[in-house]
Length: 285
Image (cartoon, rainbow, N blue to C red):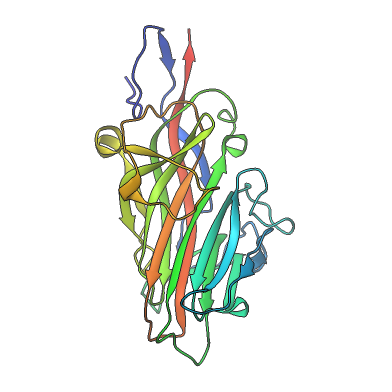
């Protein structure tokens, strides 16, 4: 029998299809010594929605850059982009970061990895960054949080409708610069989003992180999360519980970071190079 993450069997008999790739964004990374591949974009392509700024850049009134969370209006580029739609939002607060230092795009080719001669590269990476060439960020205070989600209507053929059950989520993520960053997994069940108790660090060299199998089934708990109300998730106020991961209608990742000082020109660089979902459809006989 296929083991489905968090599926509690009811009295109604179910026929479970074999676990398969439900959705995939991006392509596997390749070494720079290999010829480039075709992708979703031909160059760095701006996101369809960008931040709205406010604040004065002081300790009491920091700059705030908000791209409000939405799962109805895409973040994915509105043109010159052939990939699946993605949704979400992010928020950045800072005492020094100015709007002209921000970059929000899908990258044609993004380097992951610390091998300078042959780094791993990803087509189509979703990139958010801030840098000041020739300057550093000493004395800066920056906070950063966001969520990227993919909806069921954009899942692979055979999974765009029906009760999708998840048994694995996988992502290739990276961060550079002076800001440590961590993440969690997100799923949507019914009308509500849930965020995982399981966390992962974003490595500076883009090592893929994944969750699945026994850990995903047995150890992960989920708490209600409303990214439209507040992108910054507070785990101390959350109630994590076991959750049946069937009828999943969206999935993605959450990211958060903070830095009070940075001695380099790039204070943060966050990228999602690949995201995939494995699972099955459960049908009532």
